[in-house]
Image 1 (cartoon, rainbow, N blue to C red):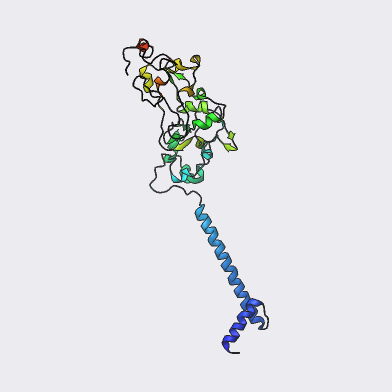
Image 2: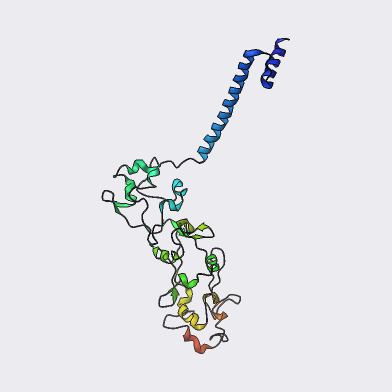
Length: 298
């Protein structure tokens, strides 16, 4: 055999297990198997490294960061579930400050800051870090409220009056706002409450990052003498007579607050006050039943 044929034969024997070339060839086989094992380990190590990069633990904040202010929209904070910090131990309307005496889970990332009682991070929750005096839980600022009227009404256990109560001497209806809203919501959304095997006790059930928008309790209809109290069940009416619930941004419709000048195809005061179903229409002897006082206007 020439040298090339010998080399091919040796290589073939290593792959197939032929033992005609003795101990030297067995050594080559072991070396090749060893290299193959190292290659497999190297590939596995790369996979593990890639996984760790994708699912890396939250890194402590460093650099020019104002630790005296807590931001929910911080990239690291936004990744955390609400219940990690805000645990519903009670059903009180005003939540308690997270952390307790051991500052868990904050110390999971900020151990260095919490090791120093003079650290700016302490001023987020404490008026005096040395005595442990706490600030009151802050009002909602960086979160909006996500509420779906349709899904709540479909349950059949709640109605409009569950959340909306007469106010302004019966003229208007209240809109839940601030911590007082929790008093109503927590009637169903108790700690660890579930609906359809989904947790409905966490902050994220209703609150989403973004600007806070509060519905107005002042309507144009109130300026022309409309009062909810005069349009209630004592008159054989309910909310759905005038308000329709739908999906989307403006979930609850309202009638056009006009009678004499209402659009022809719009649902308005004239839809009922047509002189047939209720007083109105062309009967101008009843004007003052709606237009009262010195400041009424069209």
